[in-house]
Amino acid sequence: MLKADLNQLAIYARVVDAGSFAEAARRLGTSRSVVSKAVAKLEKALDARLFNRTTRHLSLTEIGQVVAAHAGRVLEELDQLEQVIGSINDEPRGVLRVSASVAFGTLHVAPALADFLTAHPDLKMELTITDRLIDLAEDGYDMAIRVTAEPPLPLVARKLAPVRRRVCGTPAYFAKHGLPLTPADLVRHNCLDYTRSGEQGLWRFNGPHGEIDVPVSGSLHVDDDEALSQAVLGGLGVALLPTFIVGEALQAGRLQAVLSEYVPIERYVYALYLPTRHLPAKVRAFIDFLIARIGPDPYWDSGDRGER
Image (cartoon, rainbow, N blue to C red):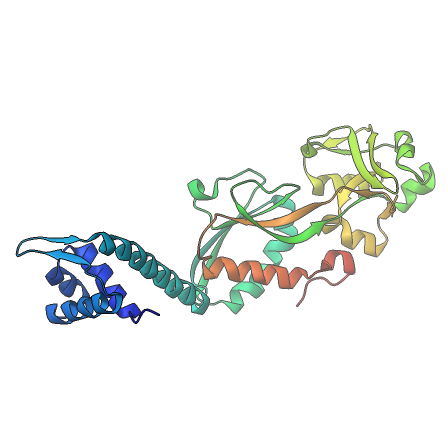
């Protein structure tokens, strides 16, 4: 087993980087003799000469080159370890820039900010509510909160909650037009369509016997889920709506969900951020806060309004 220690390897790496014992000593804030002794001890421990020394030039031996490569990696790992420990110990501070989609951001992110910022007084937040696709790096955001089936690469994605959608209508609408018992029955209903789904006029379900595609039609096409929910609450027709928008209306009986055994294909709410070796404390804190607040069974599905 080698008797070289990390300090000797670190000093050796500094000498290689500096190109001389004297310059390495200056950068390390120590004497040339301390640096020279450390390198001599390393050579003794390795039983190998690491430098070719002349009065004017310092060059690496073949073994010295190998040791230098390993010593450099050791220093890099130590630096990364220090950063990780510092990141873990750091309190969230500075400015956290977040972009959130309109519906989820308005209904569930914005109401949570008072609790989050009160818990982290050294942190400030800039929240942008938009459905516009943003470039986190180019636009200078720390993270984005989006509803999607497939998170965009190369972003790192953390699931915050499932997005459960239900075929909804008012009790009065169903009393007048009848309850659909199978997805095929939807052809006889006024199906209000969400135009941002990418599949206008086609609703997809997972049924007892697999995936079902149902062509639908109706008198209204809307590019906003909240506006669509208002039309449904007004009794105009039925729509596939996410429960994070209509959960409260379903629990209160203002809306009725049908075809419960035919579950629309799920999407998720994701927290998205750029790949990084060390996630900033402020980003980690906000993601952890949202996960804890929403819970494994989202409060909009369980009746708990997220007051945790």
